[in-house]
Length: 178
Image 1: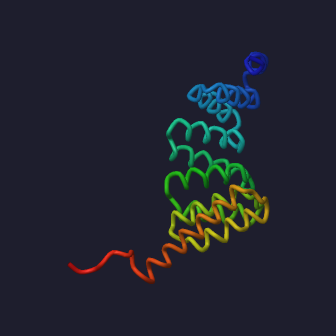
Image 2: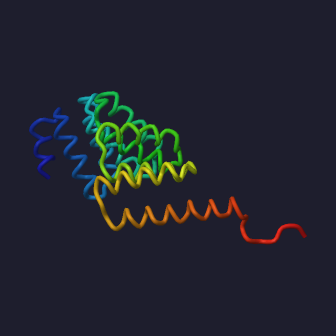
Image 3: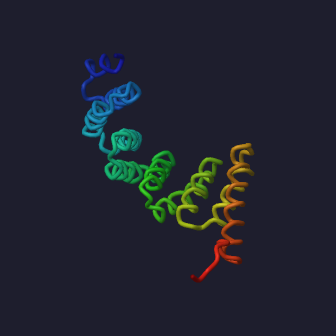
């Protein structure tokens, strides 16, 4: 409601339109949020935060490719925008575009490492079959922010690596031949 008042006072305010988009998004009105973001972007096409927020709404609406385009526009406007880079990496991971997601997560953990970023990196590495590297990423997450949940993930990954190693060395335990 506040944003509608601001828009009635200054309909050319990209800030008001972007705020209205956030409010609509928070209320679950995603397509209306995208419309508000589009209006904000027509007034200020270089606003990385609005591009990022539009990408989030589009992803939630089931349009991951369009979301990626929005994150790319946010990063063009502000190459250091880690929120847009994190969201881009998350969507790429969800789309199983692991190589691209890996590149984004590696930049994130280099620039501003957080435990969750290392956990997400580990997920990408597991998806690529790089289990030892994934274990290393989880251990980095545990170093930054120790938690029982991360320790469980580390133990589960260690067990998986051990099982794969045993199968590689001894086979799957079934007789061969026929």
